[in-house]
Amino acid sequence: MKETSLQCLLILISLLSCTTHQARLTVSPSSSQFFIRDFVSLSCEEDDSSAGWTLRRNTSKQQRTQCGDGWGKPAGSSCDINVFPLDSGVYWCESREGPISNMVNLTVTGGSVILQSPVLPVMEGDDVTLLCRTKTTPSNLPAAFYKDGSLIRKQPTGHMTIQHVSRSDEGLYKCDISGHGESPSSWITVTGEHTTTPPPTSTPPPTSTPPPDFSCVPLSLFSLVLTVSVISSVCVLVLLVLLVLLVRRQVQRKTENFKPEPDVVYSSLK
Image (tube, rainbow, N blue to C red):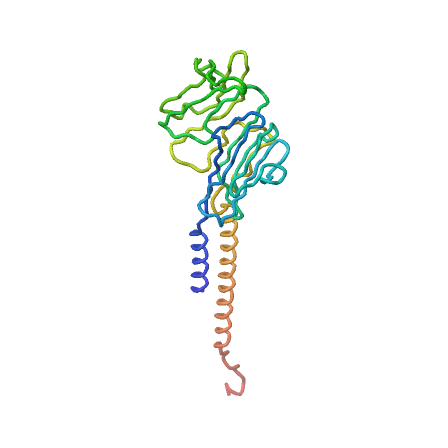
């Protein structure tokens, strides 16, 4: 019984001590908005190539498709795309072991104005520069910048710097250039610590929902919990069986050792 309990304990410890590799999805150029036919390179920066990371995406038309499966051109751990509006969606890196990287939301617009903003979360205290660009004219035109629908300020050179960002600067940003139009909106996330699993960088369309969160956890927390539960159930069952066998053995011994007293007969009394 003690050996069985020890084996169960060792199995649980080995499962909990397992480590998994991590990857970080980067976008070049670093922006969450692009014009039609812009060249974009997405890379899975991994700490171990043996993990087998694959770039996947959700769009309004496709779910969980990987680079090279009708979109993009694989180039090692990277994927190159000349983007179109149908390429708008959520992108992430996924390994054979289940864990995934951070997710980024890319927006491709057929309009004439985009907002270049950080595609990954920014650290508290850092300076962040937003650039309002047009497709066919210089990028230094006067622009108005908005946060959560409210005007922040108008800048004569088309770019705005937020100094020493804090959590209160988190929100949905867009810009407008008079005579050219308005950009789509992008979400800027502010974090107090380095993270490889930030929220999407903008509000994705309803059909571009990221995959379930349980797959985001190293070692696949769902699989770990399920495995631990199964092993625990087996251990309990084994212990119960051993306990039943022990009780039966004790009862059998008592039965064998029991010697009934001899019957009293009349001849003995006489």
